[in-house]
Length: 309
Image: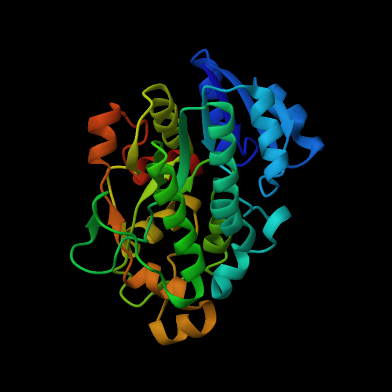
């Protein structure tokens, strides 16, 4: 199968492209600058420079590749694109990523229609952002949370991806919080410095997924021409009071400090408080059942321990 990966040099793309190649697929993958084309070629793909926010650029790249399927992994949250993470102003930090999830998604779908590509798989998100009512673990039938005020645009952008890709007959994979090579370096450094405290009781749930497991689920979705929404998370959604101290222990750091919610809101903003005190995790039962997905790292406990040893 000819597979077009939009966003091939991000942390997810760098794990996905080799898995697709290993399964015998012919991969064309994009990057935003010519300096990373060589990396894509090393991973086994044909590298292409593409601007995901330029409809003409997207249309030309897709038409030239003549793919059977398109995988949308475009974001702009690396320091080179977005600068230092800003928890207090998440919509500002995610501004370009939000555009890639709205305008960029629309450009890819238009290019798919124009070139006769019948299947699109797109990146969604399912870490702590389940609707904040009812139980602590959500399925694909549960809506995403509208978000705290500083991330309303970001949440709306994720809903846009889900709505338009599913309507077009594609699949949206709602990935948990990524960890693995290059995915959690900033968080680990903050934990080591004791600058990532527990907030309140740490009762908010999160779901995690190792990059390699996320990539393997994506390969299955492509090969099976999956449709609909899938939570791509590990088997153990957990509250911050469990995963954060464990992460600290795996890094050799001291136990995280604990601060009250009012102070966390003042220092880090509403997203940090919501995530760590009210967040909802997600169930992976549908992805395992319908895609036949098997995880190499069923729990973040194993993944954190092995990855940070």
